[in-house]
Image 1 (cartoon, one colour):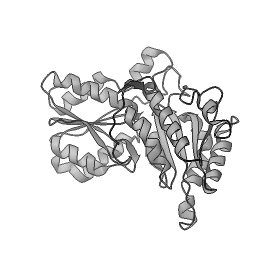
Image 2: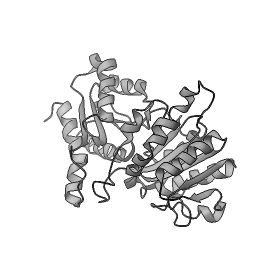
Image 3: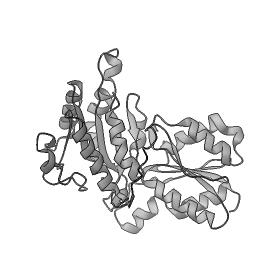
Length: 325
């Protein structure tokens, strides 16, 4: 197996999708000649041409709406929104149209649309370009929300999303694009299934996307002091794999949830509620959450890092639920 990056894994997934189905095309801002804001689509326009790799005007509402129309017309569009904050300009198309058409048509129409967007903080892009809005979209019935945190998921989740008859949003954390490693030859599990990335017995670290490497790093450090932490990668935020959440907590009896969203109304709060409702009597300690501070993400690097979940905070929370603090 050869070394690759998260960015290259996504590009390979896009290439495979374009080769497999002539109905698949990609569109978004700077995805063609520029190669994408994060260089994910570099070289694809030369390979597949401007009809299938389409640069769009700077109008998220316009080109996301065009993607909804293309999906209704029988195509399989992949729409790239440069960063998650720009997706707010297309909320009407995503939430009021793509997510509702199957319901409002009585099942007569489906919208097989895939929307990719960069998310998260850590690159000093300041308060307007450092959001983690995955939880917002996971709140909406009619959408499916994927958060690939590994190279294998970065490559294969797109194929699974394109096979779904309903709109799917894929969030790619900006700090993962340069992560490198080897792709597995095995097919990944279904996109709606959470996966244990590291087995353990003493507590569960539950996370997804860009926070997954931090959870794994914390588990490695805890192992040095004799604590075996299980790391559960949610992978899909809507629908959540509640059974996997309950199973890991029932095994370890303690849980720390790591989520880059703000604490209030966070995805971590929803996971905590699932544990309270379905596994309360399995717990030996209250659930802990490690989330971003309740502030707009700062620009200066030291303040940005202070506002985001970090490994030391995960370790502190783990020690707290273990009664070691």
